Length: 138
Image (tube, rainbow, N blue to C red; front, side, top):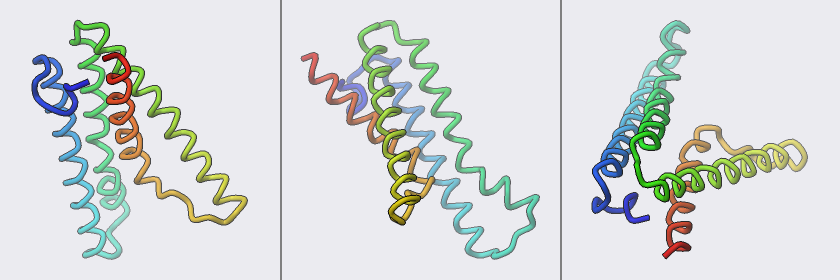
């Protein structure tokens, strides 16, 4: 599925990619902002610390809305189906990895997977899944 790698896809696909990159950019910027603040101000007030700590999750809502908009706007059923299949594979593998990490932590005292990595793991697996699925249909 070339649309997620380069810009030669339809206008709907290009908008989706732009929205996702924008969401990722804000996620990184908000994460850096929160991290720098918490490193500089060691004990911020709770009423300020909680919203600031949650701020990096806000762009995730944007990514979900962008995905929903893409699925609504895309007229090519095959392209929609590829994305949905990729998201299903990503959901399944992410759930399996997080569950295995929890069991390994509980039973074998292996360090737990930091929760901050679940979202990037999901999208990395989704991207790989979509590429593999699209090559399967060539």
